[in-house]
Length: 396
Image (cartoon, one colour):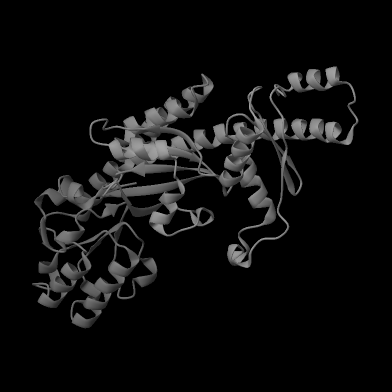
């Protein structure tokens, strides 16, 4: 929010002003404008504020002047506008040097320019900027909302977000399964295409040396891939403090502007909605399937015709099922229980959704167990069947 110091220098009374020092802070944001003419101002300091003063209250105390400059920088003040000639004559060199070190712009105001000539234009500029941003935010929100209203899905969301941020990206669910991806540089991003084919998404977290449960805020890192250093940024998709997935920006080497951030925020919201819907559908299907197989395994359904009919009603094909794999986790190795973040339920749930995405498998979650019914071709011999089951076991 707000305008930059360098932009404020182009409007109103500051057009006639001169930057004495602190040029490194000209990109500081201004959200407020305030006037100070008292010695003890620390409790009134606010971040992103442009402060105006004559230093009258401390005109004879150089140490107090230096201390105020330090306190302003600590508070995140955007810049200091001063008319030193009125009472000081000239600012001490120590203050100018300190201002340079702290990247706090000190701006000299001409004697004939009044505070009102500075404050009013800047406040108006901030208001106009915020109104413009609000309008852009509303327009971007409508773009993403329309995608889910017309059932556009994750790929259309990814394509649209790429247009706003001009960056290749990957949308992941909370288990790091790839939901959609975009390549905004088809001729120069072969690494991304290979990465998607391999599907080794856990490498994204390893590159930043973090666990996925620790990604509560955006994280940056470098990943070595195909002999190249790939800059990546991982943004969690959150709703009510729960994480539903991640947006990974690939080969990301710049700072997002305000429009980029607004687009990411709205994209994250609609992705969260889609993931919550998907999760609800999967959970309902999982319960129905578990109930059906519980009745089947217990012998409550005795008619073969009834078995196939009920399975068909739930879109489950039992044809080709010729074996059963049962997974039961008795206990978790102590090294995996780091900070108690990994539980039996988490492992079972993650394993279920990983297996659920594979082809030619029926997967049933039942409390502490996962039951897998692999499908085999009708003419598969016992050796080929054994090899197929071993492959599934290795994947697990």
